[in-house]
Length: 151
Ligand code: HEC
Image 1 (cartoon, rainbow, N blue to C red):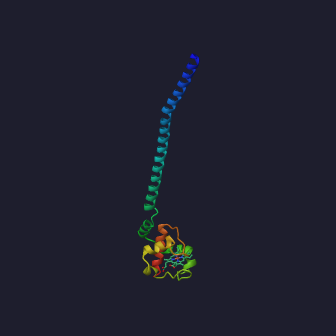
Image 2: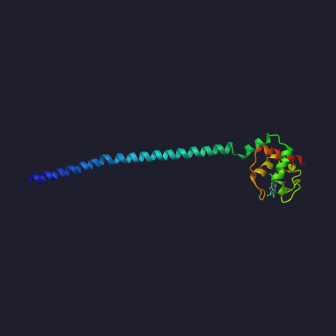
Image 3: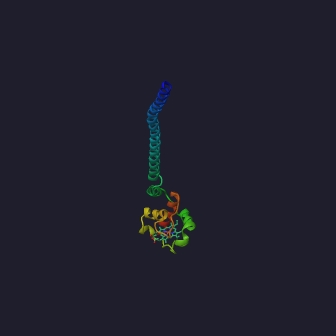
């Protein structure tokens, strides 16, 4: 009887011990996990913000077509280089002397269009079938000088 009581007691004590152990350890480990995932979440947010602001910065200051236009307009172009660039890239559509073929005659085009409009016409590909050209600002200035010489 005494033995059986003492067995029950130790069983009860061990259950109580485990219950207390669970109570003490569980909440703290859950807290540790949520703290860690919060840190990961915050790190991701910060990464996304940094990446997107970097992209916006690059877009505004590097890839903005208006920056390209402004840069091109400050460069003195060469009519001769412009002519050879034109022969390589444009004559298939605009004709060997820019008299017009698939594309329109480009004589006096600089009266019809402003310099920024012409630059955008060449680099933006706004009017298919004319493609957009990836071109250095120096070459664009040369082409522009050539087109001015057609007047
Ligand atoms: C695949 C054919 C093609 C090529 C190559 C091409 N163009 Fe064009 N281009 C056109 C067509 C078609 C138009 C007319 C688009 C429209 O309907 O507004 C045009 C329009 C233009 C205009 C506007 C003319 C105007 O009166 O509105 C300019 C300027 C021009 N091209 C310059 C160039 C230059 C410079 C190159 C070479 C770097 C070039 N193009 C290469 C087909 C071409």
